[in-house]
Image (cartoon, rainbow over all chains, first blue to last red):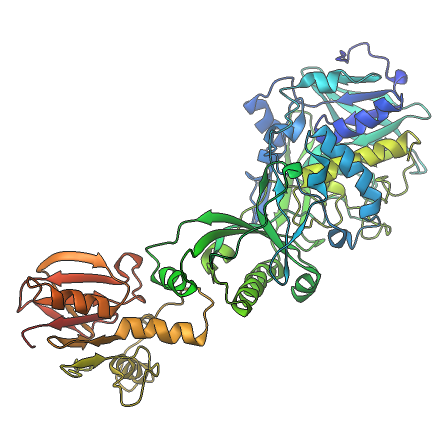
Length: 461
Length: 165
């Protein structure tokens, strides 16, 4: 239920959760189901206020995504970035988890659970079908979006879970031995900052988004010692997006080349293909690629396209190709503390994020592989639109990797249980823990990870 | 110095693009022009960056298609091969004005045959599929006038006349 922060007895809760987006929701649902008591602290108001949002999330950025980019996917209001979610659902595959300390078997039950929360058919999380040689048909589930801002009762109706808005978790305070945190610093809108001491047994989970999570950690310092979780200077690093290459190719196919029909159990989908294991290895085994194929009329203004269509015979048809890919996790792609403060007094962020050359090359090579396969069967040709691919790359609206999961504290921030290395009672939920990004839209996956964390925290895992 | 347009033959006007081999004994009018551009680049005819750019463009912009050798040869044939009993066809010539119709055609041959078949058509200009301006690719302008101003050394253009040049 909704609570007022004034006069609230924090000791009633076992868990304090920073943020009220879909990660917090999945996490709190599991805690609630296990009969545990949690308090969700949302920095923003009940209803989105664009000016307030801008004052909180305003930041700087260079590289392929500038400072005006990231805040559009870091929503400061009840329900968090669920308000900006487009509803695309696709799970990370086993090969996408290659560098993670966990695998698909760890995630599978939680992917199913997250599909349920998102009201999508479970089957959509597991469906693939054969396509032409070298490629697998793997559509993206689409449908009604779960926007928690429109359904606040979902957040407010969880037994044992309370929620307060207008309350920003600014920082966590470490114990002298840095094995736990012993307090949190809260900014209450219009009232200023207050410190809350944690009781033994209380834990904090940061679920404040791919920018918010590192911001809280980087702000958790007295100015002299390292910020909490940043003892090895890893917080904010490995910032990743999903480079998206809109209309970077054309495919003209013969009449007999059709995409598989997605089964009714899948629900609605965006038709897409990915390279099979051999193709993935041929791309270098570091960058996964998805090619979305949208039916398109044969372009009459492109003489080569009409020529190709004629050569492929009666019924030849075309697709516009939009690609999405991995970005290599790179410690130099990072978000840092910068000049200026938000209304809570937290330092503004500056992001530096460049899509690696390997990502462009993987998409390019993937389109070549597609062409090779089509040529071998005499069923089509591909056109690579170089400018769209190389110069017009955009993001997917996904902020990942800034509190990376790993076994080695020298190259990661949280462990396989999403616990900040070294700290007994500090955890992170959300796509900031992604070790690598695959091409998969993060929402389903971050919810699965958060639900898994919920079970871990309540001793159910 | 530019190449003077070449009359190939009254019965069969065959051109090859960029030196593509189309068949034995077929003149490579466009290819000759390209080689002359290279000569200029090498300092044989003067010129600088603009010449370089123009030469690269004349060779045909990369369209991004991943085609086979056979595809490319067939595409070149469609841009350059034409047979006619009544028309004289010249590569690298663009005629200005006098249009009564402009239509997109799949080949030079289609443009030639259309002009041949229409009594109103005296001359035509065809723009090849490699034209840098997308809107002009494979356009066939049918003209009802003779004696129109002609631009020679016009890369990507082919023109023909019923009355002789």
